[in-house]
Length: 471
Ligand code: FAD
Ligand code: MLT
Ligand code: ZN
Image 1 (tube, rainbow, N blue to C red):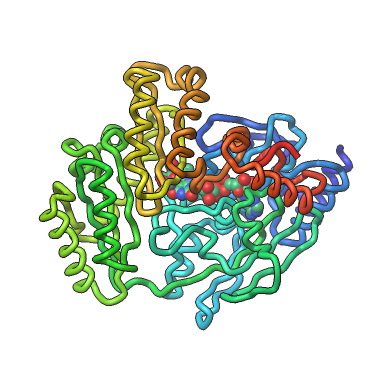
Image 2: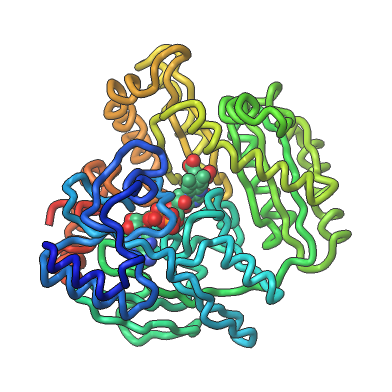
């Protein structure tokens, strides 16, 4: 083993291999549910180093867990407890390689933090629209490997839709240069889309060519209260009709979720939450002007009030106010973390089915556990809910999870299937949902996935046990 570690040291250089010291930030998952132990943490600085590492690991029969910002919500990016896996941190590979203004593309290394990518695009006068609450620490490689969603999907799509090409180190150490800026290329199987969303189980993304967009002339943000999800869905329909492609964000937040933000971030002054079961955060990105955006947005709010779809609304008057409204939404995750673990779900449904799903599932859960609280919020514009289940008042969250996680998951996921949804919308499968997936994914699809894994990673060295665990 020493010889193997010496070989890895000669590839990355001794400052970039760690076997001792405080490795918690690499070995513990973001939600602090699980802690693993790596044989070594490697931080390569270039694609050819990644290639040599994979070849060395393949020869030694050692598996590799790729990691970006380690913000995975599904325990996908930490090593297992065996102390035999290599944790491959991509954070040193953080260069912007090129920006092609004529083609509206930008090529970046996979360890670039998402916020750095957004900022580099903006500095050049363009928009890279992917936006997540974790954007200050997650990496573009992690975003592509999980096909992340976030808060701008309603207009710009998931990470997959924002990527035109990839550079990948395959599971046998070969480098595939697929850094194409092409918007059309029908030359066979779509390898890019195979690696996107594969959660590090097929290869390592080392760079990506991303789509850029013109910066909007104006952005407006509003906050509205509604009496129920049916009304929220009506508001979404109206927003699509009246704003057209300008609608760039549509988030829904339940009263209990906002109550947690109010409790843990009292200085944010959450508006309208005490008197309404749900609040909606809407954003319009206008390509004409601030005035045009405001006229359209005020027209929408007026109509929604007149039709009694919403009960009240606030339109942000300044960038600072808009930022605070977004901060309230984004801080739901931090407020939950401060409150203690809950049973987390990241589900998608046809938008038309969401109200019935919530009514049905709320009732089943309330019947099972008295006093349970539902932290319901999410990207309603994309049909994506974070339907989380919090212990009753006074019940220890760890004990609650131990006792009820399996049963609650069964209730929620059975209900998801009943209403035509998916058990993972944007966070992925990781190790948290790998056993559940077997019960809810179409068996033929699972079998095809296994064939792909076997073909591309026959020695099962790439993030084994994640996404699919029985080969
Ligand atoms: P990691 O957590 O390090 O890894 C995630 C997975 O990708 C792992 O399986 C890992 O092995 C693999 N991986 C990482 N880098 C590579 C690479 N270069 N090549 C191959 N495989 C790789 N997610 C959303 O979709 N929408 C949200 O709105 C959202 N909001 C969040 C808010 C907060 C506060 C937090 C903590 C998380 C949020 N997430 C959200 C989840 C998370 O941020 C995303 O899944 C993100 O895309 C992960 O990026 P990362 O760089 O942290 O990846
Ligand atoms: C969000 O939408 O805030 C994220 O997906 C994170 C979460 O589910 O907590
Ligand atoms: Zn989300």
